[in-house]
Image 1 (cartoon, rainbow, N blue to C red):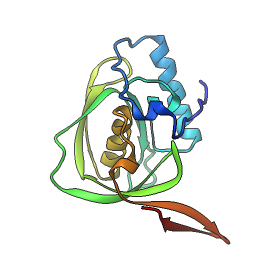
Image 2: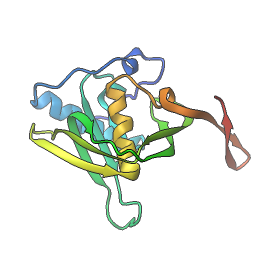
Image 3: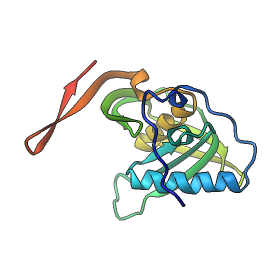
Length: 172
């Protein structure tokens, strides 16, 4: 496994729709393993293949139970993911991105979604996600469509470090 470089704006791969995966062979398995290692090293809770300069519809997400920190985080690998059945209820949440360092934004997203796709071996999977897990899935799937959180944000903030503290400064 290799930690890959995470590309940042203005790299144009972040603005292009990623290609559908049709081959679940060794190259895809290596990509997935590398993405997991890269996400954990960053550290992050999700990563999409375009963020490591690969135009394929692959995401990895690792997130634990918000209520019980003793339960280890669950790892999800989804190939060719799609969101289905977004809830009518939405929530505003602050998001950041490994490909857009030092910016955060308030993004309104559906509170729950169903994610359909394939696992790393090509078997169909369906994940019902709500709360922050649903937000993470939506954020990563947006990457596969060339959409970034700053495109959806109601407000964008920059991080300013000031003597032993971090302060948010509104940009937009």
